Length: 378
Image (cartoon, rainbow, N blue to C red; front, side, top):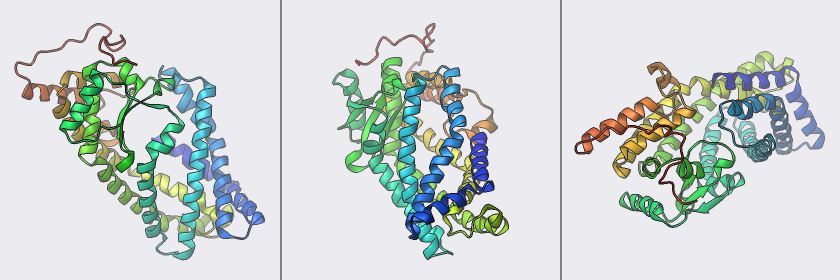
């Protein structure tokens, strides 16, 4: 988190320091005098140049380090191809957002952050609804989970909890990495239950049911709406802080950077720096709020699936890429999920309360590596 923020801020500072941002704006002004076109061209070039400058860092964190920890399944070519797809999607989104943002700044110099917060709400809502059907399929193939005992059990848990289970999808994330994952995503007509093929192939039936119970908990407890409200509030606060900090930075350094004022599209890196610093400082808040929701989903999932041993095993599996026993301070400040230690304890406490004569389950030798006997059909 820290180094990611440092790299992002450093890249934006370099773009300002060498007056690249003002060059992007000048390019836009040579093409058109219409403010929205100038803003769109500036955003396009800024996104592309920033992506290129950050590419070495992205390769290290997203490919090299994943290889070092034996989590990556892709070749470099496949990984880079997905990065290009992400670049296209994120750049198109950036153009739309920045055109709307700078229109708000021009029309309401003092209250633009309120309009931007409202626009963020609309954008987030569209993302929740359309993300599962428009964005996710760009990176993975989603197929209906085949009929069978495991699907029937998932549907039974969903039906018991009043959760729509008309669509249960499996997606081919094993082509990218070895992590296990599942989610309940979408809204209204796009709602769906999805689990990756790693979960099916690497874990046992009790573990799968425990994970699905947890994910259903997010839906049943309205965590999408809870986090929507929380993060929208944080966006609003961040934009308000930026509306105060960015003009001060431009007054002090704008001439050196070639940035005229806040309404100048060349100020994009200034806004980006302010928001990056704000959200880094807000990390303990966002991590804690997310972790509280995850803990609630854990409790719901244990009650729904009634698979405490499966839940504990999954928590141990996640230690492949998460620190299983952080210090109390680490967990409080930086963990957006309960630690593996916390989750195993939660599962065993639930078992002690709810299972008559609970027995200790000793893991078999190599249980975290051997293929499960009860894996679902592929």
